[in-house]
Amino acid sequence: MTQEASPPLPEGIFSLLDTDLYKLTMQCAILKYFPDTYVTYGFTNRTADMKLTRGAYKWLLAQLDKLGNIQVTSEEIEFLKKKCPYFNDAYLHFLTTFKLKPSEQVEIHFTPGEGDTGSDEDKGDVDYVVKGLWVDTILYEIPLLALTSQAYFMFSDKDWDYSCQEEKAFRKGCTLLEHGCIFSEFGSRRRRDYHTQDLVMKGLSRAAEEGKKCGWKGAFTGTSNVHFAMKYDVTPVGTVAHEWYMTIAAITDDYENANEMALRYWLGCFGEGVLGVALTDTFGTPAFLDAFRKHIPAYTSAGVGAVSTTASGPGTTVQSTIQSEARTTPPISAPLQDTQGEHPTKTYAQVYTGVRQDSGDPTYFVKMVREFYDREGIKGPKTVVFSDSLDIEHCVEYKVIAEEAGFQPVFGVGTFFTNDFTNKSDGEKSKPLNIVIKISTANGRPAVKLSDNMGKNTGDKATVQSVKKKLGYIEHEWEKGDEKNRWTQKE
Image (tube, rainbow, N blue to C red; front, side, top):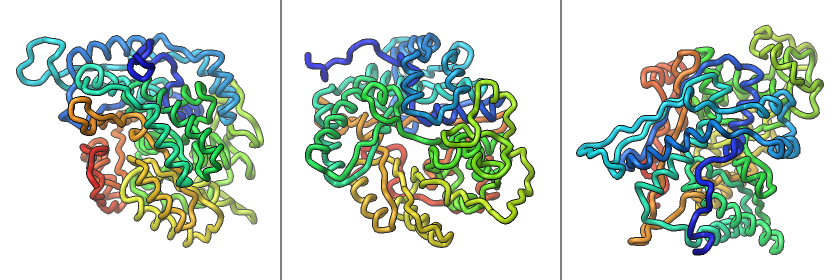
């Protein structure tokens, strides 16, 4: 058997860094500002017709138990210090002793379908509920999603193999690089399994070397997966997720100001010019842009004026220490009426390096953001990161659209890299699971996401409708936004 033909042991998850970078950056900020916030997470299978077997459920139970035995190693801490200098000492110290407690924090259930016989081959629905302090439970999402996908393709759908996965990733990488695309690998959450992502990283690393030899203008900038970034000595990539905005909105119950508060807390933790790509669509991009144009209060940024909180990024006035976290004053607690004096601060739009497009029509998004920057008189270079269900054709198409509008396009390519298989039996596309784990409640209040596509509305339906009314949200239904057939749609 070739290396591509059979996955090596150990199976499942064996490193806490086998997760997306933005889970760690958010955990760092949560430790600083929200260490006592209690949350729950819920699971959704958007491809509800794709059922798991009871055998898959039993395997998941065993893998879940193993998560409680994993700790961050000293070598991993050194890697984070080297590659992620924005992590403060207090957070790195926290990670050295951090452990998940799945027996206390995770409930997993299996509901068999009709005609259940009790056999391991019977199919049904798997569901998760994660609950606990936000800072203690935020790292479950990516491992649980990755394990669920692996379980499905180990037990429910075996009509595939690993043949040509590394070569396929190499060819994809070369094509993107030849077209001048700047991209990173974003495929952890819906990967077929660990071995697949490893093969993909090998192929993309080879493509990067080929690109250098050939002088292609594109660039492979790294991976969102911190473990694989360490394994392949590339940069871990990412900033923040919808969860950050959703939870702050739920905690405060102030959806009109939630975007601005989330931006302010982020700057308060990491400082200006660090992790500076903003996610726009949590409550719809128009509502986000209303916040993005506001001036940053002087007490938020560690580099301007008298600060009420210490940013933890490099180059700021004071570095956070292990002791400083407990007495950190949130930027939101500073006076609402901020006196800027003769030297007003910049706006969020000026300070953030760019924005991420993760739902809805990318062409409409680019037009909307371009018009926004023009109205605000912002002429400097800005980045648009595309991360919604990308493939080669979409990357090339969106690159042209973004560059014509004066942006630097960057691409986070996920499922197209790590779950692109064909059925052995008929050569047809092997459909990936479309599964998500989202924050459900924070301190007892529902947490919701609207996005720029109706198909991605998430959370309590009554709260979703209430927030839409508060924000004057306009419904958008993108013809390519069918969440049940995300990676099998025909153009």
